[in-house]
Length: 93
Length: 263
Image (cartoon, rainbow over all chains, first blue to last red):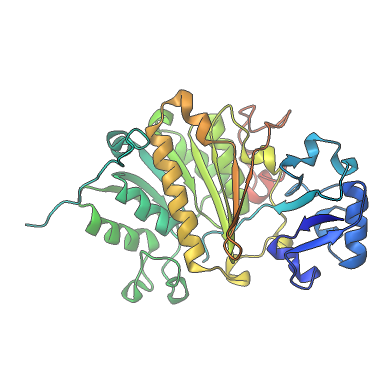
C-alpha cells in the first residue's frame, strides 16, 4: 500500500495520524479509498467536480501530479504521496 | 561611547554582500510573527533601508512570537515599536513606517517608485490574497520577493524571481476564508514563526547579494517544514504554462486581494 503524508489541518480526519497507508492504483483510487477510511477528507482536497482544489497540490514522490497524469497518475505500493495545501498565516493580529 | 554593531561577512564569503545588503530597500509587509524575526535578521545582516507596512497595534497576546515587542509596547503602533527596537541595534537604520493595511492596489502604489534592481519584497502578512498580490506584483515589476506562511508547527517559504516557477505556478489561488483559518484561531508556535522569519531574512539578503543572473538559483523551490517531525519537503515545481503572474500580468487592482488572487 502507498503511504500518504497528511498535512496538519487534515489530521483531524485521520485521528491525528501523520501518515496513513492506502490502497489504490492511481491517485484518484487512492483518494477514494482514503475517503472510506477517513470520511470527510476528500472534500478538503477536491472540489465538487472532483478536481484537486486550486490551493492544494498533490505530489507522488517529488513530482507534482499536474505534470504527470493528474488524478490518473499511477501509484505504486512503495509510492509516497504528499498533500501540500497553501499556508496563509504569518502575522496574527 | 556606544559601539556600532559590526557586520561580519560569513567565512565562506560571497554569499552575502554586506554593501549590497546595506543599499537594498527591503519592503516588509507585516510586523507580526514572521515580520519581527525577519526584521531582526535583516538588520543583523546589515540592512539599513527598510519600509515596514502594518496597520496594527501591539497586543499582549502577540508577545509570545512577535519578538520585537515588550509589555510596555502594548497599544503602540507596531511600526513605531519595531522601529524603536531596531534603532537600538542600528542607529543608522532608515526605516519608513507605512501604517496601513494593504490590498493589491495599495501594494502596487507602494512599489510604484521603487528601484526594482535595489529592492527586495518580503511578504510576512496573514492575508492569503496579499501573498498572491506580492507574487504577482514582484514578478510584474521585476522585484525579488520572499513569501512565507506559518501555522501551528509548520510553515512554507519560497523566493520568487522572474524565470523561475512562482507561488502562483504552485498554487493557482488562495484558499477561501472558511478553509484558511487565521493564526489566532489555530495557534502558532512562536519559535516556528521565528525560524521562518529568519529564513525569510536569509533568503532576502542572499537575493540582495546575488547578481540578477544567478538569483534564479535561490528561487522557485517551495520549502515546507513541519517542526514536529523536523521533516523538510522541498518542492521544485515547473513553471506552469499559462501562469498569468509569470506572464507579468500583475494582480487585478480593482478588487480586494482575496478576490484578485482567486482569479
